[in-house]
Amino acid sequence: MIIRRDFVNKLLEDRKDNLRVVSGIGTSTWDLMSTGDEKNNFGFIGAMGQALPFALGLSISQPDKKILLITGDGDTLMSLGSLATIANHPVSNLTVIVLDNESYVETGSQPTATAGKTNLELIAKGSGIENTYTIFERTDDYKVLKTIYEEDGPSLVVVKCKAESTPLIFPHSFDGVTAINRFKDTM
Amino acid sequence: MEKFSKDWRNDIYDVFKNIGISLVSHIPDAGHTPLIDLCEKDNNIDVVTLTTEEEGVGLSCGAWAGGKKSALLMQSSGVGNCINALALPNICRIPFLTIVSMRGEWGEFIPWQVPMGLGTPKVLEAMDVKIFRVDYKDEVGDTVNAAANFAFNTRKSAAVLLSQKMIGAKQFKNG
Ligand SMILES: Cc1ncc(C[n+]2csc(CCOP(=O)(O)OP(=O)(O)O)c2C)c(N)n1
Ligand SMILES: [Mg+2]
Figure (tube, rainbow over the protein chains, first blue to last red):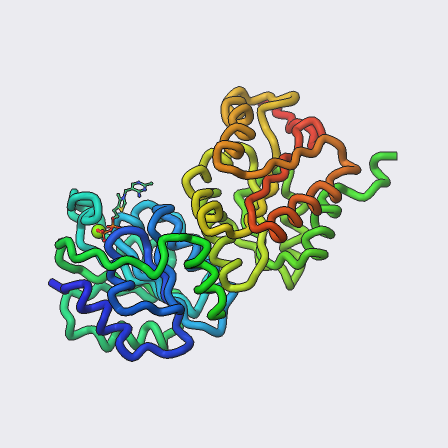
């Protein structure tokens, strides 16, 4: 099982200038903020289910940047239709990483559908996203980096990780206007 | 006379071009079809068909963060699907523009359209979206222009409600 915070930190350790990272509500935003106070990041703290379409809009409007969305299984399950939208309006610069801990950790670790019979990689594939895979071990880190920076997207990587609550690392500001202005200025 | 005048959807399209809208998302409604066709024929407008209207809210917001202006086209039922998503443009003060074709208010044949038709203005107001209602064809262009300027100049959410009386109620025939 992958420890998500270590994984996210490793992935963004030597990040390139052309990368913009968005995170979904829940633990993903605290994970992203734990990598440092970075203008090239934007973390959702609400609007559950909106991170996927937001990342698509950003990818369409910034075709020369690499766009990475890091989000949870719960957030992804709330916007499954967006997987179909992304597949049918393909953006080659978008990678979605689902940190699949099979639970809603943020709200008390209740099991999600992926703890049962549901497989998000198969849903993404069935939605028409061609480049999809699941990783279970940290030995596959290099593969994910290659997907983000080199492969043609849209891509979706399911990262099976441990369901544990981790320290909350808050963003530079909880104020949405401050956060989005800072992020937009990097484009 | 009517059939020689320019279709009001062309007026919306002209406003889109004037203010530089380059991304249009939608779940189709018959009232919007000619406008969707115009946008699809335009190489400088990206058209995204959604699976639910709420996606259009996040899509617009992400596009704006990346420097693109966009609009969401939907029928009044779709407004109900967007409620929580509207928190995103609201809290980040991201300009958001939607053009809503009204159903369930004038000559409606399908009773199922009525609840959300009646609820549409209330829901939008509850989420702090400014409403620009238009009842006459010759006011469509000015109204969409005013709504777009309101959204993009003041970084607020704006909805144009195209009245069903103006659009013309869709006629259904059994058999
Ligand atoms: C519409 C809506 N429903 C419920 C919540 C409460 N909520 C906040 S975070 C979260 C869990 C997110 O789950 P997941 O994406 O799997 O995140 P993680 O397990 O990484 O914390 C929920 C249910 C919310 N914020 N909005
Ligand atoms: Mg989870």
